[in-house]
Length: 88
Image (cartoon, rainbow, N blue to C red; front, top):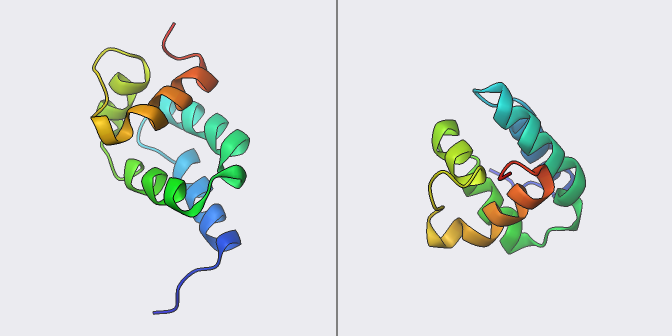
């Protein structure tokens, strides 16, 4: 299988961001995707890709500050929360 190019990867990650299981995460991750994805480097995109495999209920609790995000996601989740204003 050929490695996907950056543009294809960005489109795939954006699509996965906007079509989540719960509407709240659709809104939060769409906003993040539109604002930040294009500026992320390869390692950051890898981390975001892994984050998108997490359960929406867990993601929502992390982004809203109800539960602390796992350490490897902490900075990314904090950025998503800041951008979405979901932690207020």
